Length: 453
Image (cartoon, rainbow, N blue to C red; front, side, top):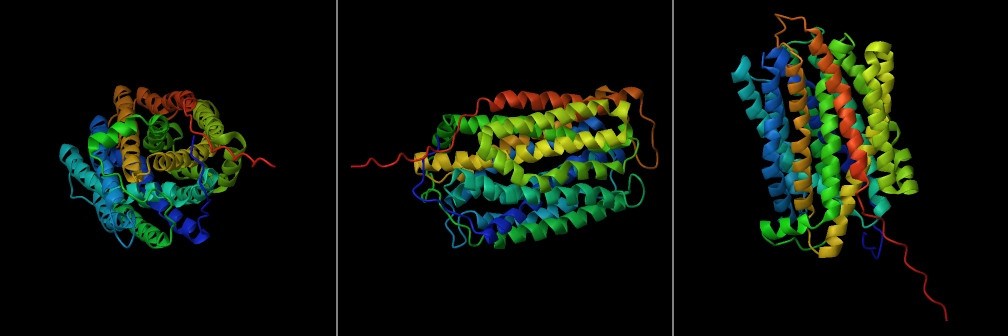
C-alpha cells in the first residue's frame, strides 16, 4: 500500500500542459518507426523481412544498458535546473538529428541498407533515452496524491493521442505523397518533418516543466548497482507493472508494424493506414476524462482490466475483416483505440504510484533507476513485436520488393498479415488481463477520525 502523505500537492495547470507536450516525442518515436520502418526497409530498401525485423529490434537491446544508466545519472544530478531537466535538454538537441538520418541514408540496398538504418536507429534510441527516462520519472515526484497522478497523466495521454494522430496520419501521408507507396524522397521529407516536430515538443517540455514541484525523496540512492537491483528485485509491485507493460506493449508494437501491411494486403489500399490510425488514436483524445473517472470508481486495477478487455476484444473482432470489409475494420480498430487509451493512461499512472511508494518506503530518490529499468525492459520486449511479425511474414512466404519491381504476394503471405495484425496480438492482450490480477498496489486508506473525549 502507498503510504499516506501529509499534504497533497496539486500540480499547476501550466506545468501539466508543459509536461504533457513532451509526449509528442513519446508518441512520435513510438509510432513512426513502429508503423513505417519495417515497411520502408522491406518495400524500399529490399531488406529481407526477417533481417528488417532484427534491425528494428536490435537497438532496443541497447536500451537495457543505456536506460538504467541515464536514470541513475538523473537521480544523482545536482543542478539549478533540477535532476531531470538537463538530461531532457540533451535528448532534445540530439534525437531530431538521429531520427532524420534513419530515413535519409545513401542509396543502399539489402544488407548494407540494413546496417546503415540499424546504426542510425541505435543512435536515435540513445538520444531518446536521454529525454524519455527522466521525463517519465517526473510524475512520481510531482505529487503525493494517488488520484492526482492519474489526473496529471491524462494530459500526457491527451498529448500522446494528438502526437500519435499527427505522426500516424501525417507521416504516412508525407511518405506516400508521391504515389500510393511513396518514394525514397518522400520518406526523407517525412523524416525531416517529424524531426522538426520532435525538436519543438521536447524543448516545449523542457521549458514547460521549469516550475514543476518536487515532492520525492530529496537524497539520491548512493548504493551500487548490486544493492539497487537487489532492492528492485524485492519490489513486487514494480515487477508486476513491468511484466504487464511488456505484455501489452508487445501486442501494440506488433499491430503497429502490421498496420501498413494490413492496409495494403487485407484492405487493398495502402492509404487506409491513415484512417485506421485516426480510428485508433481518436479515442485517446476524447476518453481520458472517462478513464480517470473509471479509475476512481473501480480503482486502477479494475479499470485496467476493463481497458484490456476492450483492447483485446476489438483486436479479436478485426479477424473477421476479410468477411465484412473496410468499414467493419475501422469500427473494430475504434474499439481497440478506446481500450488502448485506458491501458496507456493506467500503465503510466501505476508506474508513478510505484515510484512514489518506493520513495516513501526507502527515503531515497531512485525514480530514474526504476523508470529507466522499466522503460528499457518494456521497450526491449515490445520491440520484439516487429521481429515476431517479420518472422510471421517470412513463414507466410512474404516476398520483399522495391517500388520499381512490385510483386504479387502469395495468398499465404496475405493470411500471415491478418494473423500478425489480429490473432497473435489478441492472445497476448488477453494474457495481460491475467497478469493484471497479480497487481496489488492500492490507494492509501483514509485516516481514521480522531477519538472524541
